[in-house]
Image (cartoon, rainbow, N blue to C red; front, side, top):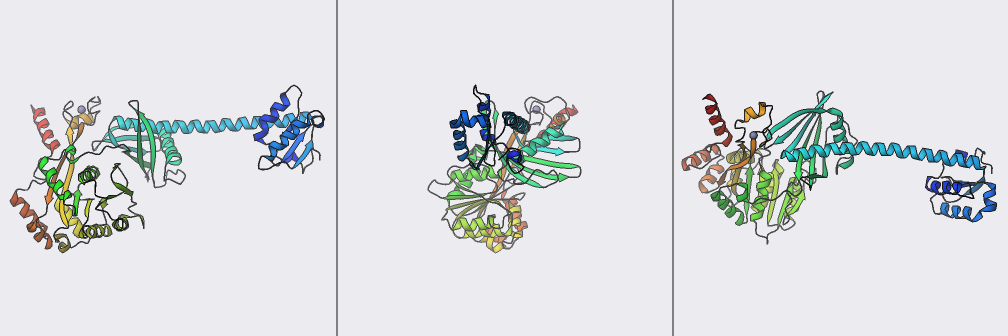
Length: 476
Ligand SMILES: [Zn+2]
């Protein structure tokens, strides 16, 4: 069959896998002009069959090893074969170039993301905030609870970084990047900081805004260290009381506080107190701190099956001593946690509430009755906590630090050098239980005030007192 035949190889694609071999044959001292097509054609010069039949048979064998195999052979002039070989080679080079250009862009975008994360680590930031507008992107970091280092950056590089991160690195993001879409994902990445590789996860939340989109990234360090209750900064008497509650091995212990106030860290610290012989199942959304001794299970709060309430029921069938729940935020979970505590397990959990009595109100709102909560041995204690900012002594007044153009080297402009634990611990007794049974929180409050119970409200927040003194000095 002739090469020019319309039904022949002319419409076929050159087999790229054997292209280098064919190019080499064409360039050797005694050239054997041949080429293979994707469709299984071997095309050679007539003379090649006369002078180098073994070479062509080898080529047929190589084709047989491939998917298309060897199907037909045909002859052509050396010029036609050489042109086809060179065209295929050029096309291949062009393809490789555009592919490497794409890879290069990806690399640049990922580098931009890593730079952003390293900057966040240097600032000891918990979150990276990005707001994309038509022409710029505003970048800020949350450091010790405050938004700092707000700057405007080039929109395109950062948008590419986010898109690249979501599209190529995410473990659970399975859609193409779309600015106007609400999406969340978690990304694992390793960055180098202080010559040390740091492994971390980014929890990315993206949502459309009026004139663009906003991205919030929470940093979760994989080697996040567990702190003991004492290391948290909890007063000794509180550590002792809480430890006694935990060691009793049953009942409900709840932790309250606003978001980002270290509740998960405290929950993990409580697990350290539990004797090694006890089986602890920790249900978390998401897993923030790796706890080697604990059976940590990821939970999806909004999932129909993998939600907290269902997972508590599953955990109860796995013979645990302790169940730790990262958050009780719905009625079903509250009831499941209560049932677990009622059946003789120790249950620790966080609840979104302002203070200890707020937790009781929240549980009542979630459908647990006063009688249920007053049941002896079930609700044992409630801890409410804050992480109070420690003002930077170098720039003294935090407000001034925010307005100043000169960045303080000690606090990097946040006005805060760290945070200090502060909290209240409520241990339930018969008097309080009687008031709870009647769902009378005002009575609980009265009892506590009479006792001189050290509540969060009665102990002075650090920053407020500092600001006052700063104002006083500035008046002089
Ligand atoms: Zn400072």
